[in-house]
Length: 564
Image (cartoon, rainbow, N blue to C red; front, side, top):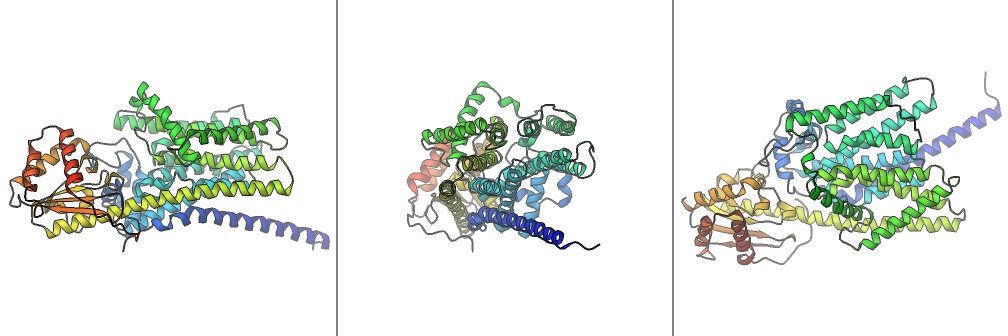
C-alpha cells in the first residue's frame, strides 16, 4: 500500500532531520580532527629524541614473529642496562609497523602519533555526546579543548610519547564499548546479554585486553567502570557479574607481571617519601593540565578549580535546569582525575605524558561546564558571552600549545644536528680518535650509543672512534662510569692517542661549538688525566667542565627548517 501524502511528507521530514544531524556530527568530528592534527603537522619531519634512538633501533630490527614473545618478556629487553617491568607487545608492534617506511625516517612514526591523538579526541567527543549527555556543541568543545591542551606535546610530538597516547586510546575505547553495552541493556531491559549488547560487551573485553598489554596504567579500568555505573548511571545495585571478566583479566595480568618481574605494580615505591612526592606531583600535573603553566602562580589554578566547583554546586542545587550534569562533572572531574593520576604514584619520575589519559577528564569537565552555564540564562547575549569565553579558553590553550610544540621542534633540530656533527667528525677524523660530546638532555638523554649506530648512521661510528659523553646521554647510567673509563683507556693506548675533539651543542638550533687538539695541544693530556679519576661524580663533573669552559658556542641561531 502506498503512503498517504501527509505520511510521506512526515517521513521525508524525519529523514531530512536525521540526515541533518548526521551531517552536523560529521562536521564536528572533522573539526576535532583538524584541531588535533593541524598544530602538529609541523612535527612530522622532526628528528628522533632521547629514548627514540634505542626504542626504534631495537624494535625495527625485530621480525613480525617476535610479537608473541613480547607477552612474556620486557619489550625493551636490557638495552637500558636493566630489564624494565613493561609488557607492551602492542606498542612494540606499532614501532615495527612505522619502521616499514624506513627505521631512520621519523615521518611515519609522527603520523601515527598524530593519528592516535586525533582518534582520542574523537573518543572524547563520542563519550561526551553519547554517555555524558552533553549537547553537541559542549561535547565538541570538550574534545577540542582536550586535543589542544598544552600538556600534550611530549605525548604527541615525541615519538616515544606514543606509549601514553596508545593505551589512552584503548582505555577510552574500552570505556565507550562498555557504556554502549550498558546503554543497550537499558534499552532492551529483560532481553539479557544478547544481540547488540553482547557484541558491545565482547568488544569491551577485547579492547581491555589490548589496553592491558599496551601499558600497565590501564589496570584502573574496573574502578572507572564501577564509578560510571554508580555516579553517572546511578545504579547502586552493583551486580558484579559484568565486572568479573574485567577483574579476572586484571588479576591475570598482574599475576603475569609478578611471575616475570617479581612485582605486581612497582609496589616497592609506595613508601612515605614516595607518597609525599606524589602529592606534590599531582599539584604540578593539575597546573600542567588546567592552566598550561606548571611553574606559574598556583592562585590561577585554584581560582579556576574554585570556579568549576561553583558550577558543580549550581548544577547540584538546580538539577531540573541541567539534568545529570552535576553527576557527570563529579565523574569526569575529580573521580576520573584521581583514577587517571593514581598510577603516577609508582612511575618514579615526572613526565607530562603520564597524565594524558587523566586530561581527557578535564576536557569533558569543560564541556559539562559549558552546558551548565548555558542553562543559567536563556538570553542570546548570555550565549554569545559564553561562546566568547569558551573561544578565549581555546585560544589560550592554542598559544601555549604552539610554544610547547615549537620547543620540541628545537629539541629535534638540535638532535639532528648532533647526529650529523658527530658523524662528520668521526668519519673525517683519524681512526681511534677520542670524541667527547655534549648535547642538551632534552635532545639526547639516553641516546648513546644508539644515535651513532645504524639506522641513524650508515656505519657504526663507535667502531671508528671512542665517543664519550656526560652520564645523562648514555643509555645505561649504571654502566656509564666503566664504559667511559674503558673508552679513555683504549684511546690513550691506541694509534690516535693525540687526537681529541670536543663537540658541544646548546638548546638552540644552529648553536654549536667544536674544539680539537689542533686548537689546544694540551687537550690530549687533559683528556688522559680523566683516567686518574676513580669517582663517577667527579669524572662527570670534569667532563661537563671541559665542554662548558673549553668549547665556545656559535651563537648565530637559525630558524627551524626540519629534515631535508
